[in-house]
Length: 133
Image 1: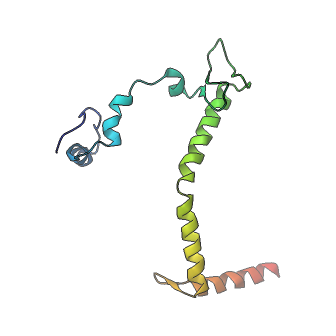
Image 2: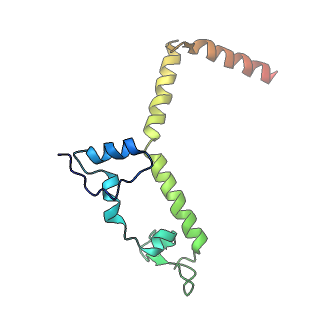
Image 3: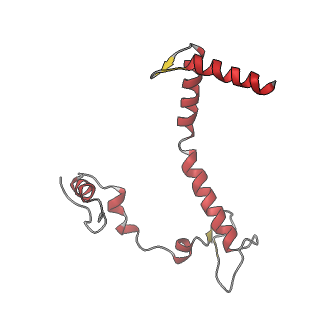
């Protein structure tokens, strides 16, 4: 099962990682890069907008604005912000669970690897009292 799915796709500066990826018995994202190498020029430049049903709008010198009036800068910014929001949204449950666990630990006056949350909470209250004076 040590079949490489395309040795050209996993060239890396990290030779041990490259060897590990090559030895995997399954296809990974590194193996799929080559199959996805033909990309639309508009998408590569980030000037393709598919946000509404009127699109996709592709910005060119002859068509500098989309149907909604967005120019290249607006479309690139929208695409970037949507990608960031989408990526960070995948991890919000981890932040929520961490916050809830921290709150529960503090409520039972628990300890976190050498930290006494109750003493930290008490110190925060002291600082808040001093600041409000």
